[in-house]
Length: 305
Image 1 (cartoon, rainbow, N blue to C red):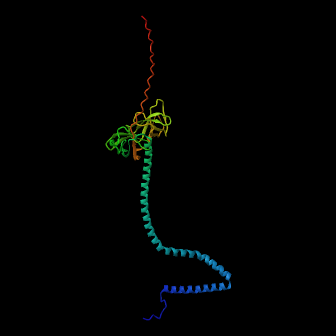
Image 2 (image 1 turned 90 degrees about the vertical axis):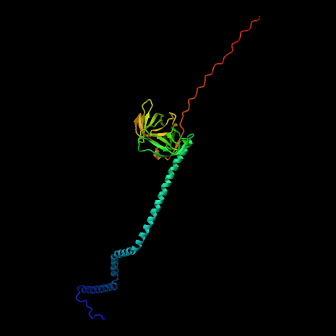
């Protein structure tokens, strides 16, 4: 089919305006080109100044368009990188979780090793320990403060033996079974431990309160003032607890009585050391007084017949 001979835009106003605008732009561009060509030929200095001005105006626009072009061109690569980074982040999170679990395990082992080393040092200082065992549980929700030790009479544990940890005294054995024993903690209301203050030797009694704390009451004849930070150790009186074992530190100021906290908390102790009951040495028997030596009485001389 042959193309129509009539190429006029017809009666469409939009087509006519577009055609007219095209003509105007073409004519204007030709005129501007001719003017610039004449200016560059006739006055090169002015043309150079005009070119510099146009460059100053068009450079930011060109830079912006170039940035937009680069951004559009980088979209596919950014999408690919997003998915790659997402997968990599998931792998790194999984690796970090595994490393965190290993870190917690290592920290737990380090803490346990420190406690065992401290307990070993205590074991070396004391004489004839009975057994080292684990505290498997302790009561913290009732007024009775009792812990369970995973060693009993088959391991040599007996009622009345003192139990201590790396930091200090824990309590004493309340009753012992074949392979387990119940330990009466210092904070139990039935626990009474003779103690003395380290800085001046003032005697006192440490009695449990049932709430995790200890009442320290002076037994000295004179009035005793307790200050926060005063440290009390076992005195050895009574024949159960050996002397100089850390017991508690005073929390509040008081007169003749105060509240203290035990150095060793049963819920934070893994291993405990069972000792034999301490018996204070008997006083020395005084030596008998020397008896005076008997002197022989001279016999009278015999009379001659």
